Image (cartoon, rainbow, N blue to C red; front, side):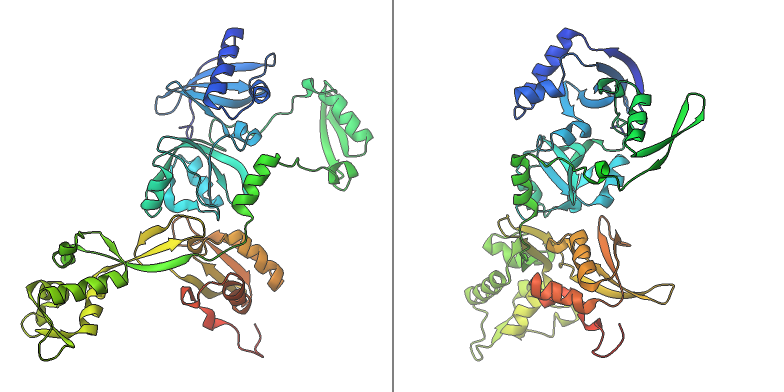
Length: 460
C-alpha cells in the first residue's frame, strides 16, 4: 500500500476527544495490550498528529503519528499497527517468519507467498483467513511487515505451502516509514543538542569540532569507551522470551518424508472404482492393494500362471504405450505394479515433529552440494535446498564457519525463487557431510554431492 509515494491531504494535532476515542479503539482491537501499554502507545499529553493521505492507488488512509513516527494507520475503518509499534510490542500479532532476501520484495509492494515461509520447529501460528498478522525475518524477532492472512493455517498446510499467504499492507522501509526513530532532545534532561554533545565530549566519548559558527560536527567516536561497550539491549519480556525459546531454540529434528502418488487424468478410469478421482493422493501400498484387488475382482489373474495378469481395456489404456496396445496382453505382477506407479504423478509428504503433514506435488529436491571455482582459482563449497528440510541456512553457515575455520556467506540461489545458498571457502564437503548425516541425522538419499569430498591425503 505504501510501496510508492502518497499524497498528504492534511496533518493536524489530535483533539482530546479523538485521543480518548483512539485509545478506546486500540484497547478494543488489541485486547492483549494492558491499560498501561495502551496509555503508553497513545499518550495523554504528548504530541500526537492525525495525517490524512491518499495512497498511490487512491485509498484514503488515516495515519496516527507520535513523536515523528507513525504508530497506527486506519483503512476502511480498520485499525492497523505499524512496524514501529510492533517493535515495542512484538507479540501483539501472530508472527510468521520469512527469509531476509524476501524483505526487498515486500518493500516493493509484493504480497508474501507461502513458498517463502519458514516453518519453525513449533509449527506455524494458528490463524484464520482475514486475521491480522506480522512478518519477521529469520534470526530477528522484530517484525518487518504487517498484513492480512489470505487463508487459514489449516488451508496453508493443505495447499502444500503454495500460493498467496498474506496480503501485505505495510512494511519496513516503505514510504510510511521515516528514515529512523528520532531522538527528541527536548524531552531529555539536556533539552538542547549542544548541551548533549558537550556532555558527551566531557565524558570523552566523542570529539566535536565547530566547522563554522553555529555548525558543529562529530569528528571522532571512542567505540571502546566503557559507556558504549557496556550498553546492553534490553531483554525481551519473560512471555516473549518463552515464545521465542519455544519456537526457535529447540534442537533440530529431521522431517519424516514419505513418497506419494497423484492420480492423473489418464488413470482416472482405473481408480474411479475405489472412489478416487483426478488429483487424489495415494501411498504406494494403497496403489498396490487397489491394483491387486482390481485384477482379482475382474478375474484378470491368469488361470494357468498365477504370476501373470491379463490386461483388460482399462489397464491397456492406462499403462501400455501406443505401440504395445495390440501386442501385449499379459504382464507379470511386478511389471504391472511398476508400470502403474510410473504412470502416476509423483508427490511427497513432509512431516516435521509436532506439526501437521504438508503434501506437495513433484519430487522433493535433495540438499545439493557442489564445488565452484572462483576467479582467484580457489574452490568454494556451495549448498542449496536446506530450507526444504527445515534447516536455517544462516545457522548452518555459522556452524560451518566454526567447524571449518573458513569464511561463509549466504546469498540468493541463482534460478531458484525465494531460496538461498550457503558458500564455504574451500572444499568442506567432508565437514558438511558429518554435520548433515551425523548431527542432523538426515538420510543420505536426500543429499547429493557427498562423493565430491576431498580424498584422504589430498589438498583441499
